[in-house]
Length: 318
Image 1 (cartoon, helix red, strand yellow):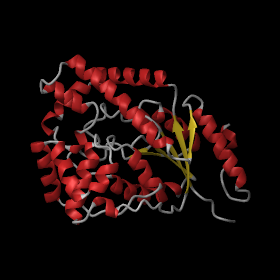
Image 2 (spheres, helix red, strand yellow):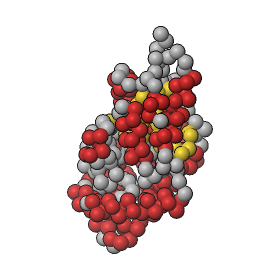
Image 3 (cartoon, one colour):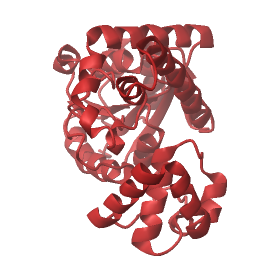
């Protein structure tokens, strides 16, 4: 009998929309495991500020790439692509499905489309760029990119400091413009990919985001930020929540302002995520309410197209 094609189910969308809860419910229905596509949940020291799955949630379904790195470790979308492609054959050995859930756009694209091979950044180059950033600010990084890679500077979001730093690192390490190494070619994958994007009315989404920030603070975000304060220069902490908390601790703003700034910046990030994912024609959009049944229905239709293949009947879940 013809071998069954395996399927990676992708659940993407803006922060705070309810991806994690749905992914867990779906994975339980399918007996599958979850791959976290979140560039910050990978760091073990900051579970509250990154809204990482709780111990109880991870006990329900096994999660991969949650709390596996330290904030002092370097980790990139390229490494994530390599790690996930190495893991998937093991997951597919016992199940036709795996669920990838997360809102880090580059991480999702790295697995689904692949990213261009880039040189490994040496410690000396990384420290040099970081030192320049700390001493001169992002303006210094932009000025160097204007000289080394003006083409990339024209298309990059100049508010995204992480991308600017990474681009400069590549330019210095490779000795050529970062843009010259970006082909944009989609890499073939030996498994099917089905993508689902979650969205809801803006007022509802923003209300959920605001409540989640309050819940994070109640759960101990301040203590988490205080414990990482001395390492605030690290790229892993250059993220919403910690930047504002550290600014408050620096005396740059009062606590109430920091809290409201976290909410605002999270809402801005959510809109940016939606803009990115809306450009993907392969994305099927759902409201998280009732999404599990909708996804199972979609998989059942896919199963029916594969007549004669040895796929477990998922219709029993509907």
